[in-house]
Image: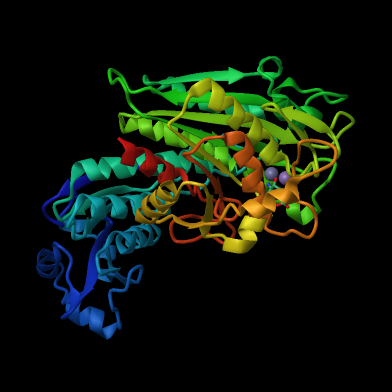
Length: 505
Ligand code: BES
Ligand code: MN
Ligand code: ZN
């Protein structure tokens, strides 16, 4: 992510190792990229004929890589000529296709120090999508064990030819950087990633941003604020024989307050921050635990959205509320059948593996009273049921507000993040009843609809007409990787949240 991005009027560039040309498909066949005529002369290549011979059709993400032996033999970038030329398909040239092409370019040009790329820039949104795709595709995770700050192979410099809007490039850089920050935190192994360590990383990110203020509540303050549910979920991880205060729960509250603007709307984003989910006493089977360092993806996304809102200087107040706890087993562990007060509601713990909704409920109830939001969003890797319903490339939206649902779907789609609304079926509230308390934390056997009953549970605590719950249990991880992300954390949701805030600005 350390590569610089510049613009230029011509494809000739000193030290470029890779020349990319974004080729589209129009009504009359292939549509050449800006700079193609210049490149054809300089390189002596008939690109149209070359494309045809190779059956290159310009489909989004299709790539035709030409290694030029004579130039390779002459050494790096002789006379401004790159030794590798790539035709990258951009299809209809729309944002979605350009995002895919950008990601493809990042992969094709990996390891090249400097890339010159001719792509048509018909609108700022298209430039933004292209650069965003490029930077997301260029992301590489740090090797485990090193801190998320450790050096890593970054992408090379990118020079865009084709009259690209510089502000759009800058916006894409901010969004990709926020996504990478979230990915780094999500990919960080749980032995390092205690609640205290996450809070520290958040404090580090906040410190470099003048409009952001940050507060961290420790166990004593959680008790004082009545946030017992967060304490209960995190209890086993830090008390007892292997006492480790850093493993104790935290609540991080980070706010971007735009300078000098009054009367701005406020968005509060609550993100699930389970730094490892073993399931607790209702222990997950081994295979179910493998990916559970990812269970704080919601918290990472909420925080990243605040950093980006600050970096974009958006005239909206944005607050991330991140309840952080490790769900462990131990003598002090909370138990199935325990009853915990959350925001005035007595909740019976139906299953200790349904820990996310407890910490979210507490944080939502707390944020509702303490912060006064215009929009209240929560984002969480909440249910295996959401992942089964929608798979790894689509997030679930649950909200009583039709307008908000449509807006989330719309801004998500514009950023390559697909959402699908699930209904908050009122009848299913009956599944959450118990003779032992006001509410059971899980739906009774036989009711199914696990993602929906989780949403209905949260609704009881959000108590806000403009509340939406985002379940990213599937989308937060890409098991095999995709063009725009390597295997592991995707940062899915970060750009939707930023775009939602942008829409309110
Ligand atoms: N963190 C899990 C949900 C999850 C599962 C995320 C798989 C990503 C991949 C959550 O805390 C959980 O365990 N949910 C339970 C709820 C159940 C006990 C009602 C689930 O979905 O099985
Ligand atoms: Mn769980
Ligand atoms: Zn969980």
